[in-house]
Length: 139
Image 1: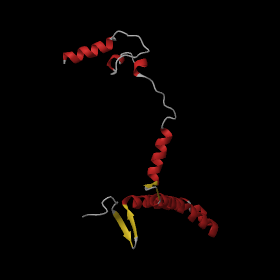
Image 2: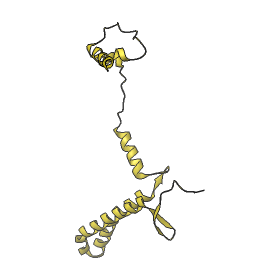
Image 3: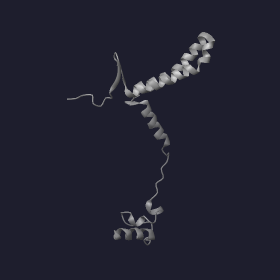
Image 4: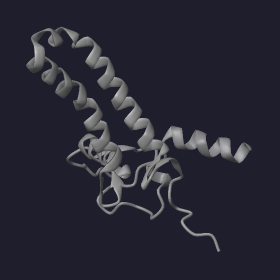
């Protein structure tokens, strides 16, 4: 009987440290950004040891951020999934306003199941509804 079917495939294994394709890609992107930043900060290398140390720290930041994103999980979800959850939550409306179809869409009220609205007088069927019903009968 096969086990561990719901686990992601391990792409790279070094001793006891294994990386999935997602983790490897994130680390490569972070390392690439760090290397590019290292090259662009070559000006800081002219200030001897403090300049080189600052250059190294600034170049390591993208890689460390990618390492945290790749390896850290909270409640069984990775950080990019939590970012999507947070973004969807922030984009949702704060308040919902309920409006009855019977009140705002007169041409739909005869099609709503449940009969008549007690707070409204009977109105004749709208021309739009009559055209729709005639089209259905013709088919």
